[in-house]
Image (cartoon, rainbow, N blue to C red; front, side):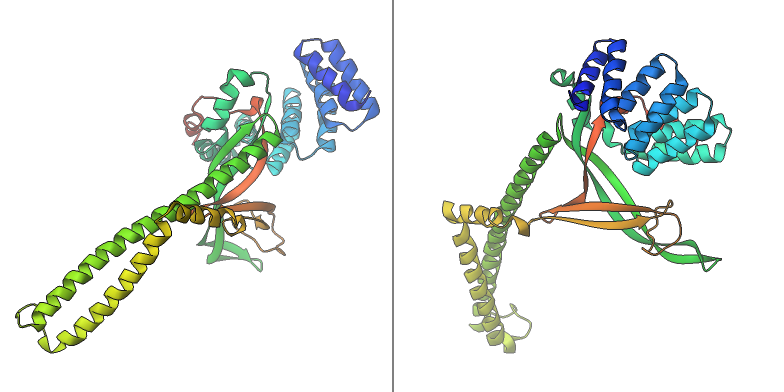
Length: 382
């Protein structure tokens, strides 16, 4: 039997409340894979349930060493250390969780509460401010994810996969900055801001989420094609109006040429004006005929749609790049020595209007923000 099979049996036993079987199966998995993070996490949770805090911490610590990118494991380690009264240990674990996920609301809340307990009001204020800012745009509170977990058909699903999308904005600001060991004022810097976070296409598996994302991109391409058709229709209407105006203008100029006074300011230029209007009218009529002919038949509409779907690379782009940002949200150079986070971002563009930073994420049901008003809670400490 493989380690994964033992873990599957351990999870089943955990759901049925058979603690002894959970421990036996998880330990069997560790015998096959001593560094398996899930097995360590399962044993850590069982140890917490028995109030064996030392064993729980040891298993959670082993789990984070095996998979340091999992914020949930760092949060479990922080809890074990908090229950043992280790503030420094809890802080280190929570900061590690934030290094893997800067927007982890649970880590920010626990860190803010830790600073409160230690009467570190300045740090608590900063953390609660971050909680307020993130809770206001929290993707976890989004309607799609909450509706997914609230659906009775997904009652047994503990983890959802989804696409996290957000807007990335860069703007130049003037602020103090240390340069060459000196604090300089009003230095031009680039501030990077991520906003409008949204979770879309939640599903029980990553494959289902990817499939739904593909469907939505196709629907967006259909919108691009429809927008082109509407734009041509609107152009035809504008050209028709322009054609009518120029025709009326030309008739008036002919009347002025034939002797009707007061129509033009300078009768000497009537012939020149007539020729200019005739050229404009000819160009407008030709453009109107071309525009209407492209939409006159079903083939014309299908041709516009086919043009979009035959060249998706012209309308859908996905690029990856790295940006380095310090804790103040300021972009730093690649060779900078100051502390920063190096973020590898995937940016998608669909059509001319949809652009954002995206990432496939796993959303545990246990980390879904509560429906309580976190902003109001945070504001009590600001």
